[in-house]
Length: 151
Image (cartoon, rainbow, N blue to C red; front, top):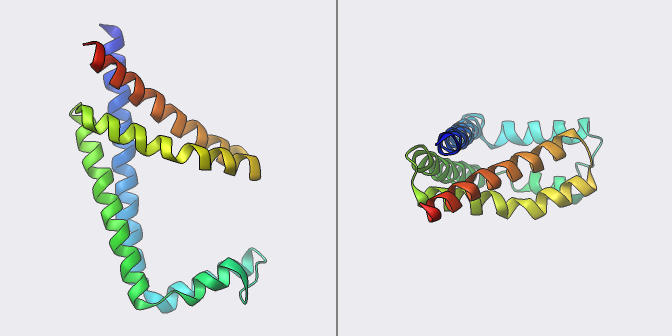
């Protein structure tokens, strides 16, 4: 019985984490809309200069050219859709819905190859932590799915 309780607490922890990601995405959407394209463009250029990256060529310049009112609105809309998915997943996990465990497990597993690549390209505590968190989420939700199958 203790294992089921531990799994329930772990799944609820993942639900809280997913809800927090949803809230962060909504905050980003609101900030992007509030700032507008001009302020975002200035901020982006300042960030590129602070990182000693070119503001005239490369991916940074390419992105800077695309900061328009339409694209800012699109980015905010995408962030709202992403937040909605995170909130739906969080609700389902909190209420122990099997579909939510599948959604979360697949959603986190999709990032694993990119996490490994990032860790190999930029080894460090942050990339290792991101990989570890995603592995932990996959493990918790996979265990939950396996437990549901056996029940």
